[in-house]
Length: 411
Image (cartoon, rainbow, N blue to C red; front, top):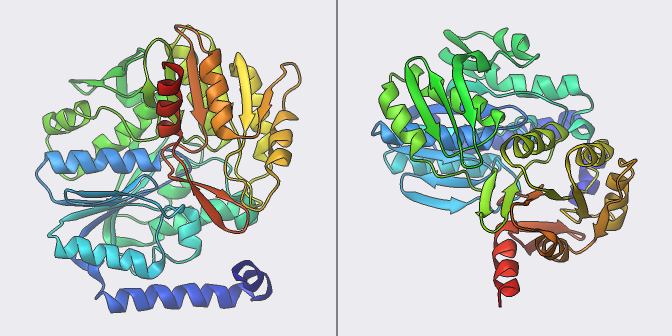
């Protein structure tokens, strides 16, 4: 019924519907963002990680923090998983979250801001003090109609900045100038050039920022970018660099983001990568950091979402993986087998293994792995559900499935 109504109701009426609900939410909860310092993080990839890193930095500095991302919700010491299967809660719910943050005595709130959320006015009537742009690649094209519309949706976060607001922009991204074109009291740019003497290993990475050495438990060049964004947020809030360093070095990993689930005798990593750009960066990181055979499990979301990327997934997998296993992910109302076949059509030389059941696919990969190999499972990260036909959600966690299968194998 919901999808049917969306098809028959004109867009301008839908926009008014979303706007009114956003306004009502703000009225009901008394415009709570006015009592908080609000940081919004947007982009295609890296948003959740940057939110996580900023939260830890602010807490290290002694601030009371709330945060909302596709990984989890957090109000001070209370943390609970994001089980919504969407990053930004609805317009009423997000204002309620902000009100709860105020009531808990929080000083800062960090929000992951998505183009879909902006399209539905979930960012409206929130006073943003600082906006961060991570990067922009092709995504949600069916929903927005074009890449340009997708970019403009992201830009609305920067339009929502307060008059004395600040922005932090990844200047290495080719779309940086667009976001720098919005008004802000302070515009701060970051690029890979800020990180000196970068070194990667299978357990982490190190680099020098200004005169300070950072030794982190994260891997991948993309995490250098994420870390730089978080460092500059901290510095913009007058947090000393030594406290920023301490906060970042104490982080053992990000849930569902290049998360090490198993380290011996082979390595198993779970990552959320669900765009071609993110997938390629994950595979590049593994190629740079590990020497063993790479076994990859991948799929693609259904529900008419970004069908164009399925062929690209196949091409990227063929380029980097020694063994390719294509499986079910979140089919929604589409045929899971058809999605798998579309990804497989992107391969020209290598023969993938198609396993419809995701648990069986993970089991097969683990059984195939030898000492020193890497099994990389992408697409879901720490998501707690698998979305199937008739709007059903099946409890799921790639990490827990790996742990159970490993335990069963060792019996």
